[in-house]
Image (cartoon, rainbow, N blue to C red):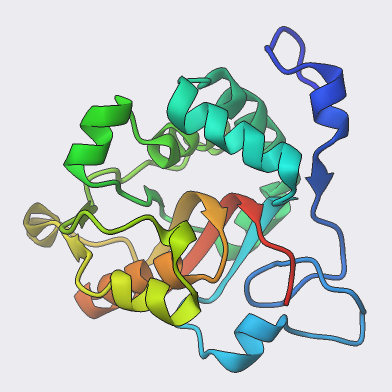
Length: 218
């Protein structure tokens, strides 16, 4: 599973947990039983996005890896995840036919602090593999929200109200009708939901998503 020449040790790779079938038909979280169609979150909350997929279950190894990317500038990990996602999700992309990859934006203040947006970096790697353009300026972050990890499901969605917008410059050209959002972590779906609502209000018809990690189904 380890692409040659990348700085990911085999011991670390062995601790990662790939999402396996059965999965939620909406958000792609791993399910306990194949008699289920949806996870608890998707059964309780109506989603505006069509469906999505994630590569890994968010265990301790994945958490450490995501932290290293965001706060220790370990962008080579995104080479590894981008390569694996490009191969694993090729059939999903062929089925959904997105016209553009749209990374979840970070607020300019947070981008200045980190020096990059991990979702944008991931999207660029997927774009190179699939030859699908990245629309990195389609969505903008208008509010520097509190960290989502400190909030519950209801608090997360409330925290993100009016946090995203479609850039004014996007209205000057033709909006893509099928969009694939790209993010590092999918938990309750509040971020993807907030972005989907903004995109569909602007005229986008279908919204899908890909993420590196997802929380276990509840």
